[in-house]
Image (spheres, one colour):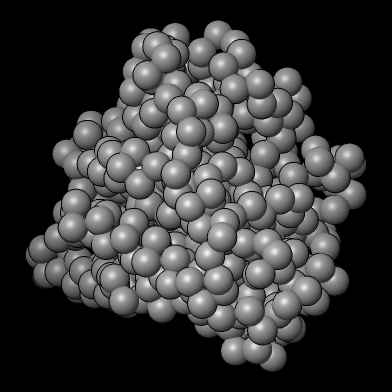
Length: 434
């Protein structure tokens, strides 16, 4: 018997396994785990001459830097008639469209955060836009629908269909006060549904988010979403903010509460969940890194792949420019190491039979080194990288190592990574980009 007849069944087994994996991969591409950045200040930072540098000190497009740190999604706030103030203004429809186009060109997905105000809306203030201030409630319903439709339709006609539209920003007390406060739930429900209807009228694929702050506070969320459910509010995703800094405690005090609340929202309301805002003190790099990793792990652990992702609020908003303490950028113009948290667990997908014995990063990879870490350093680890035709493109034996790397010089595309010999069941997707 020739060696080729011996190898043929083995090759067929590998090919069959790869085909099965590709099928599951195709079903899962839409479940790409969100590793996001809210970048509402970016356009004005650039306009004022702020220079962004990567970790090596090289001046670079901020979006490229974020992408290299694992960011695959941007969140953009939109205000109705904003001022020209560099920090509390801008973010008009046209400016948002410009940034969304840039993000799409970088291969990123887009979330639009509707504040329904001319400036910041949050739990402490939900001011109507000046142009809507004297409108009746009936007119406000039309305002919400028209504004939501106009922004999203303009984006779609510009070539960017947002993946998500957030109807209101941190609204535990409602929005468009006083008409849409939680003191008048019947009216708030109508306003939220007008936003939902407008988003779906533009494109039914756009998922609608309703967003509250203090994502660790289960009672806060149950109170709001029980009311929303009883009044027929339509939405797809529950969005949460989580800022241990503003809670005045270390994240270790509340991180389990966040995880429990995420799980409860899924089981109680049958919705998907996403942490759409998170941040930590830029001067406490290690603590912020640890907090981000813990948040990502809590979201990944949500049952049924219903934990969709994590978005950092303004990582690029360096304090000397913004006055904001919770960015991920240093005074040297470079991202802090805290942002590397988005390179952890970075298969780019929610878990699909993921082995707990190894991980690799960054993913997506832009060339250079692909890093591997093993839970058990002892023994031999055979690492193989295949293209989607089943051809072996890279191979390396890692002996008694907890960490090692492979030089990636592959053309852009999707590859499959397998670790160890034997039954080829431990496949993970690797994305290589130029």
